[in-house]
Length: 246
Image (cartoon, rainbow, N blue to C red):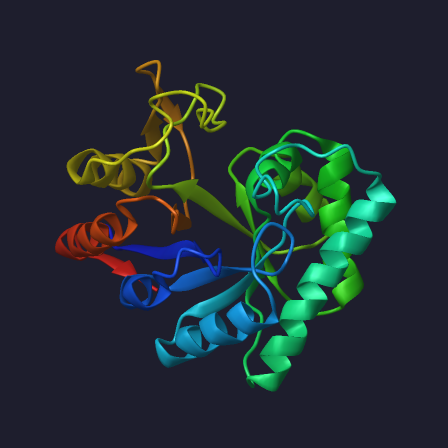
């Protein structure tokens, strides 16, 4: 019998306020650190919750664009992006120090995440920020992405991430949020989607094709209107299928 282990992560500290309900069902979290959402107060609050529930803590830096919630590509120089990302992560590190907690990983947010998957210049900026920190952290990245390749070339440890509540295109990019079928809100559909990725290393795309994918961590978006219900059911289904969450 195959034994599977999977991490479940969620983006938190983004102003939704559902963190205390999410925490019992996730094993790692990505904390907004001021780029698209969040401030020192929210970071302290969610770090304390993560510690209480023994959830691994990650930084969730973004394009510095609260107006668009970091979901729009910004015309920004590499130097300015480097400075902003370093500042965001450093702000969270200060909070972690004050709360006696450690940083486990980094996961870019929104448009930055999607762009780094395809754009080597942006991927390099993110990797250079991590290298400048001189500490061992994981980088959550999409399978077969440019940022995964750049990170590996620079000896940055990566964790392949897939999305429980998002549909995929044939090139393994996420279906745009502008499309009606971008987000999965049906729990049965989501459970099948995740089990297929974990057990079969395959994802059924929006075009109906099966494509190979590797998933070591599964993300449920905290701002999905059905987030709590979905992550609770996902946790239940994975456990029923002898998939350990850690």
